[in-house]
Structures are given as structure tokens and as C-alpha cells.
Image 1 (tube, rainbow, N blue to C red):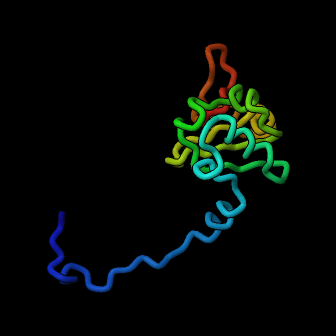
Image 2: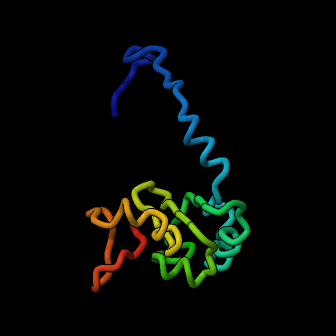
Image 3: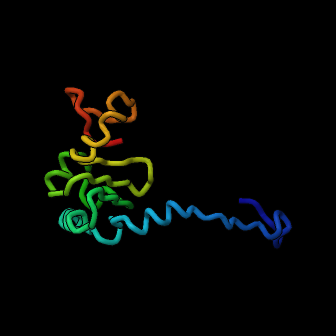
Length: 123
């Protein structure tokens, strides 16, 4: 802990920058933290989202466990779904989303693969 002695350290330090593109993307995303309290809630939120590419944010394992492309398919997730973990360090793509970006990800070391080398959908 740093003792600032009543603003003596850095008086008036404020961070006023905004991430406008991230805010706009989040506003049009499925919020997994609000809409999904369980696997059924997550599945309903993903199925009801508008558009052909669904972006979901704020996912946590407490909602539906370990997600991968197969789990997204079992939920009935519609074409091209990308779920972002709340940490931001993990994205989960379902099979249709993987098919759309396979040319980018084919040889990427960031793509988790199953025992036979197929992408799991976890990036």
C-alpha cells in the first residue's frame, strides 16, 4: 500500500480515456453474467440474440461448466457464436464460427485441440 498523504503523491490523477469500440461491441453482445444463471439460461440467451454472428461476453464456468464447440452445439447455439470468458483470456467458438475462421486458425498455437488434432473451439 502506498500512503498518498492527502493527494501528495499524484494530485489530480484521473484516467479519463474510454474504449469506445469495446463499449459499442459490449452493448450489442449477449451478457452471460446477466442473462444466464444456468446452462438453460445461457442457451436461451444465445438462441434469442439477433444477427448471424453472436458475440457473448462475461462467461463464467459456474454458468454451464467447461465450454467448447461441442457444448455450444448441445445447447442449440445458433450459427457463429463466440463466447468470451469474463477474464477476457478465453474465447469459445462453436463449430459454425470455427468454420468461418478456420483459414486464420488452422496452424495457430493458441487453438486448443483434442486428442486427434481437431480444434475444440477454445482459443
